[in-house]
Length: 471
Image 1 (cartoon, rainbow, N blue to C red):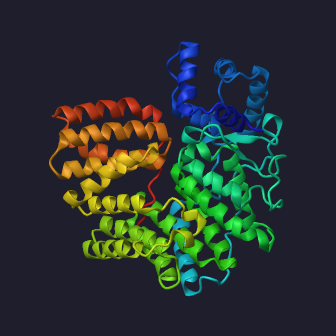
Image 2: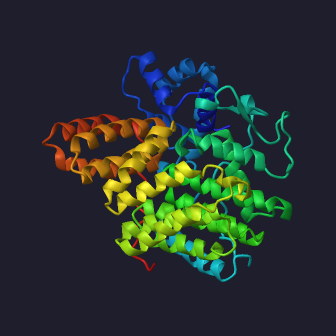
Image 3: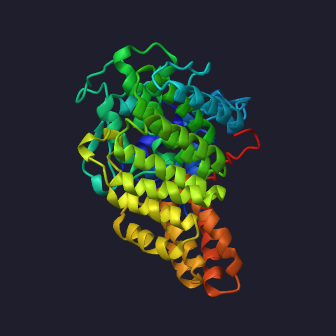
């Protein structure tokens, strides 16, 4: 087992976040220089801790220091002569594969998919990079402990003595993927992706470029979609786009039109959030066109929301308002029992919150404010609170209420730190730039100071996915 994997598993076994590990290290060593970001670098194999911190890690995580020293020595041998930035859990096909090229490949595949959503697409030549090592040592046959409201339970790993799983040819089965989706409600992608169950999802998704049996392909397609979502939340747009490309190809192979459309909506949302709303609009529209007559109402409503937000950020106001109206009308026809299991999270409250976000993007603050305020009152998930809080703060700025905007943004910033989500951090960065115009007022100064203090604890911002290429 790699050092990064070992550190992740030891941390999750205690139910700790990366921030908690950093705090424990600082308190135990008396050296207040370790941040959550440094712990993330260790776990993602971008850096290897020195002897000093290996000793304190052993003390804090209650593991023999020899175990960590041996793993660290192996890590240094593997990374010798390589650029640290190219290692880690990159789901993309390597550092030479730019985001722009992956974006264009996905747009091309989307056009082919729309022509016939059940016609098999050519898979990318490169397999998913990522962890291929089997779980060994203390994690062999183990379970991943749950944290937060689900504490006390665990996620059985396929192939363990407690859950052999109905699909033994895959590292993770459908039930395991469902559990991972629910973990994603509580834990950010930067924490989940390198975890044991996150590795298993990546390994399952990699079967899309291998020789998985026909019976296993639906699970492979779902795993690739989920790997893309986790990569996006971890701040790795290249890895996410590559995983989405695999998911789309596999969904087409098995004729799962609904999942293919969902993949395109997810990829479109990534582009929209990353500064490329034109590309996001094209992908979301393509997904919607593929299911507008036969897809479940909930999925169609979600895709219409993706279209509305992207159109709003493109400045296409009429298109955004038309899509939002259609989304709200379609949502009223939902029959949850008939929706795909992977849309379990899409309920009336979430749909209302997405409407509020779109109205905020359209600069209609009087309509957006009550919807976003209600969303914050309901959620107990730090990532969701951070994202919708960022949008609510901008809404208050549009209403001419910088003091209230600062209060909401401050709370959202703390939620972003707790979440470990690059998406949440990116949304707060946008809000922070708008609040910077109020540095002459107490709210602006307070948020600027808090943002400066919190920066070391936030995930690295994802590179932009905006491109000047054709869309």
